[in-house]
Image 1 (cartoon, rainbow, N blue to C red):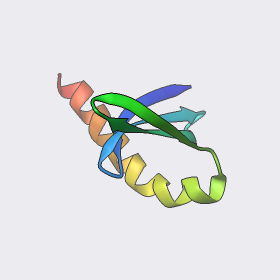
Image 2 (image 1 turned 30 degrees about the horizontal axis):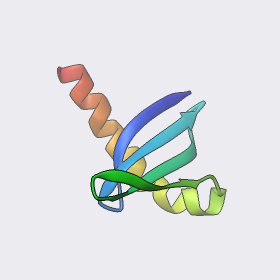
Image 3 (image 1 turned 120 degrees about the vertical axis):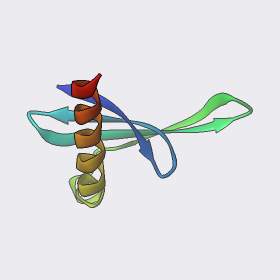
Image 4 (image 1 turned 90 degrees about the horizontal axis):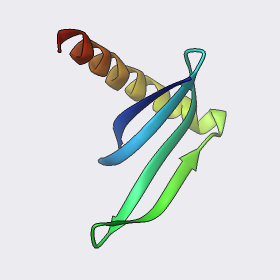
Length: 68
């Protein structure tokens, strides 16, 4: 299992990959500087819509880690 920090709809999020497949996406809503809500997506149909953009973000993260 791998975890990546990414931007989801312009805000902070966490992506969980299991065996190379997108398994969960968590996004956070903040109010007055504190977490107000946590949203989790595990529905495969909804994840498939996010998968292309998230895969691109993860590739960019991996490239940055290699360069650092």
